[in-house]
Image (cartoon, rainbow, N blue to C red):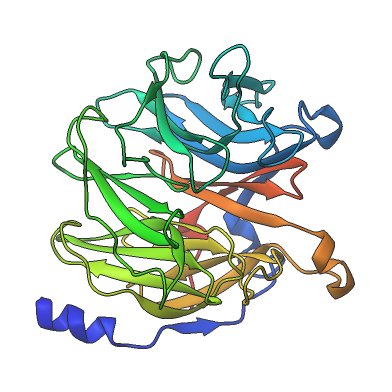
Length: 355
């Protein structure tokens, strides 16, 4: 297994051009909708959405306010009862006392097995100084516990969801920006009561990487994919359920220094949602879906948001996706739609037959 994995890690990733969404993959798209209409927005801007399936409900959250980094930015939430999304409400904010308020950042929802719905988020003046927070819900997001601050040096999942191992342990993909862009994996065996961290998985120089997402290949083999400033998605591999990791290397997948997310499906395949453009602060359109059976060879399937007019690319932003597979097998994706609203897309993976 080790020899085979090392050989596979040395293979070059393949990246192919997509079919348009109106092609043979269109039947896989079951739903495309806004969580709220632009004209009904509670805040001028929104970003960094996240989604979880909790009981019979879907729950989505994002940060919203006048603009990213502003003190009025809080975490907003909406619930889907199988028919429609509820009116968004602000569930937490960054108020410290009567005189001091900080912005909130990057919520991450996760429904633990035999546990509560968890909402991780960050509070602080900027990503170099923020800290991690956690609140939980025992009623599918209808109400929330008093938020608690995570231990010093622990941030929780920084943008993308944790994975839960068979043991019940959570692996949280995280990163820091105060000493270069560096990636870590945090572990909690008891749903946030105690924590440990791998420490930095990269030096912040060869790859300035943040916001990892974790893929589970089974038999203890894990893979992370990361946003970078180097114009590509980077990766690390583990053979021991995330206790140790390989050196960070480049994939063949482009990245414009924008957030990504991926999920390992029940059928063993993996889906990635990303902006397939390169450069540092490149265009955040199109937003695309890619698929892989092994984490090495990726096929770009279709664009959720295609680039319709190159002249308007600078003005458009479809970014920061979050992707999950619900217990019924359906795949749910949410993402920023021009910072004006959150878009929700549902896919049926059984209708995706690549190749």
